[in-house]
Length: 255
Image (cartoon, rainbow, N blue to C red; front, side):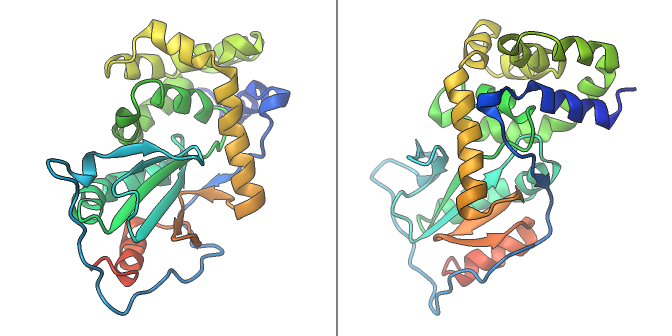
């Protein structure tokens, strides 16, 4: 069986100098949380453009995130999440349909996912999740989180020898190799990202560096040290589950 230390060693070894980043943690503890903005009155719902639904409107933001909903929503929810994070997967399972269908669809709340690189496995996963259309990014991320235990099982099953082989590959070949061993390429191929398309996306060093830079910026400027971490209207409210986050959205006026 592949030991956890072997996975961590590979993750560290995969990060070339331009992609260097400090590994953070995946957890639900509300460390460093602050009070969310509050509204004494419930905010009115906002009608979408004719023939449209806010839950269908997705855009890429200047910060590198992917936002669903009313771009002018009075309550702006941002999640720093990692595709390898089990607590992010748990949050997605608990929240996504209700967040999309009740809160985002009302026009009062927008939701933005910004990828955070906990480790080097997040780099190929994020490159593949964003390999298709902008509209597909959030659904693919939600599906990946549900499938996530399979990735770790595949990596464990590969064994130490195979992981050592990948670690010894040239840096520009490691992303594709780990994506294949982890089953990522197969997962995304079943959802419309062909292997040839995946290979191109996994070779995008500039985009990989952008993800790493985005993580470093979040850590240094916003003190984001774990996932999932949430921001409501510019205020970091901490790392928590849906049970704790939903009341904060309601206190902000989405009730």
